[in-house]
Length: 111
Length: 115
Image (tube, rainbow over all chains, first blue to last red; front, side):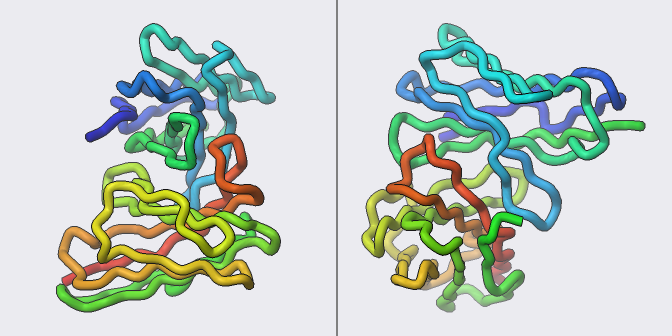
């Protein structure tokens, strides 16, 4: 039962442009959301998170937006850089230890 | 570099066998979680240990079991291996009791192939 969905398996973007990654969830109990980034042969690394009491959180080039009514969140990367080429996972938690992950979106930043 | 290591990096087993995967967390990290990532999917939560006690479990059968040791190392054991157990197994450690607000530091994973 996939409670977190990333419907775009891949995204290609030109260097310097904006990357927008989308994530949808079905469990209305989710109240904490995270994005992880994964390079080949490495484990996922934490990127940015947002609590359900907020609708936006920003950290440098990375901004996460949360739309609770639509059960949708997105990650914006501006400007995109070659080092941003990786797999990005959206994850969610219902105020407990268990993280539910999406299937990931592979981002390729073109020079 | 997260400071979390896993061994072995790759492993091949046959159906019905047993396997033990190992994880070494950062010193001081009291919580370790294990995840299974099948090909083309995101990581799925298996269970979590806090100070050597299991404090949460996902939808995995009892043949998946674990141990956490005082030296910040841990094990994932899988008995009676099935073909569908073929996956990347990730461990992640965190400082506190494992709440989602704590940053989890992932190891690079062990790739298990069951034939």
